[in-house]
Length: 255
Ligand SMILES: NC(=O)c1ccc[n+]([C@@H]2O[C@H](COP(=O)([O-])OP(=O)(O)OC[C@H]3O[C@@H](n4cnc5c(N)ncnc54)[C@H](OP(=O)(O)O)[C@@H]3O)[C@@H](O)[C@H]2O)c1
Image 1 (cartoon, rainbow, N blue to C red):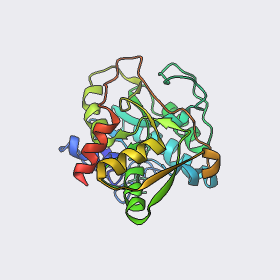
Image 2: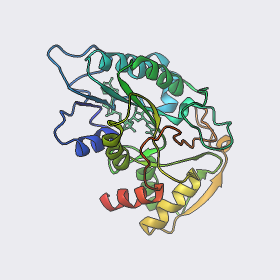
Image 3: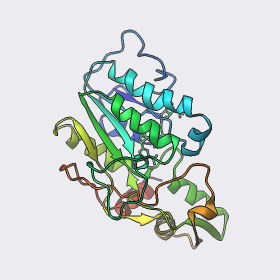
Image 4: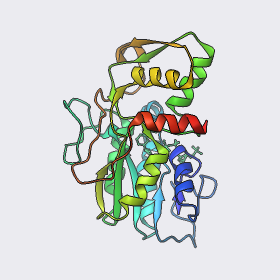
């Protein structure tokens, strides 16, 4: 069973696991216990509150989805895959974050995701990934393509680094992950870049001559704080993903 099938990762999971039952919010609002009769051999729990800035204004609802939702998914009693985030870290480390690094979330979203990890129980794979993008739903690639078509220049943050991860690659890697013991894994694209470098690559690959004006996190002034360093690597033999630029090319080919 897949939850959150209307989201970008859920959509990719439904493609990678074509026999799975794909549930959207209308089928099961995960802030409620599972509907009677719902059963699964394996739960791929991609439903989540992902509005990082909005979580600052509505921490209770964010927790209801990101913590309560995981608890409810675990109540189904089947092995569970839950996805977590680079935002469980404060970004102060030099070099990539590995599974044994201590989390220290900066904002509400990261805190709820960290509590969600704890709610997954013993029979779960917890997959921390970063900067997801795909050919569906709202994400940075689709936003940049829209802005790039409308403007000659776009201002993009250049002092946060991460590994933009294509949901198609992450969904495929989930198949491999199921052969590993339950536990916490970092699974993100190879390579890293800043948001500004990512935007430049998007315009380059899409054949747009939009300029990127590099700005700081402080200039962008988002509601929620974000880690300066979001780069994840695995010290536990988690599946390795292709380079983020390869993911970008696959995504653009789909678009
Ligand atoms: N996006 C990122 O950059 C990123 C980075 C690292 C980790 N992650 C994690 O990866 C996972 C997948 O993220 P994503 O980018 O695919 O998110 P997404 O595109 O926002 O999809 C999340 C899905 O969850 C659904 N949902 C929200 N509240 C729900 C509820 N109460 N009951 C049932 N469904 C509900 C949403 O439905 P509606 O469309 O109806 O709201 C949406 O379809 C999440 O666990 C996220 O925290 C994301």
